[in-house]
Picture: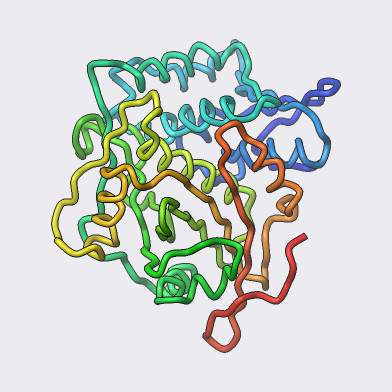
Length: 326
């Protein structure tokens, strides 16, 4: 199976080693083809039925690994959001899939970061929305806005998912030590957000949307978002992730529906997370992504469920796709 030229793939019997460039990890978004190890790992497991080992391209004299060897005081507020989010993603993926492991070089680095997340003397908060979702002329943003209209997303997804009556946009997914500030940021923030989300009874459905953008990184994005939200709603989460209070507004629709999410979590009435990948049927998904790959994703120790769906755009409207996903 051919993967991104930004990643080195090495066959090792019944295993495959994926080596990532640490400079790409540090400087590029998680959905970049050179960063999206989750998507490539699931594709390899699906197509080749092999175990996957994640490693780092060490370079000459192994100096490349030093890019990832952060000191504790460098986790927050030092512009290492991509790296810290990478650590979090690897830890979660390794916990949930027994066919995935990491190299001896990565193990101590990940252990240090996990010790940081579980420390007794600090806690972490998210960043609530402070204004309405942004609109622009980009196709994906236009589609996103349309799908947030009452009943539209439910029409697109059909009976596949129980979507609530209200659909909200752009839920921020930053992580901060104690309170939101640039100096306290652990993950990237700013435009880092879940495209669409909706609550039905005790379940939150999270949607990663693509419009003319077929990329393996959609797997990485939905995996991260599902785990991020679950760590705020799961009382057994080993990390001290505490939901920040709403900044303003008194209605359930204020701040992109954040108050509704906040109340649901605080009362313990939100228990499940479903991840949905939604793409236009003109371009569809990356060729490695099909229902068999989603079946691989679904076989995880956390019992998370993932779904694929497509929409159709005829004459500036949006409707359910008639194409079956196989």
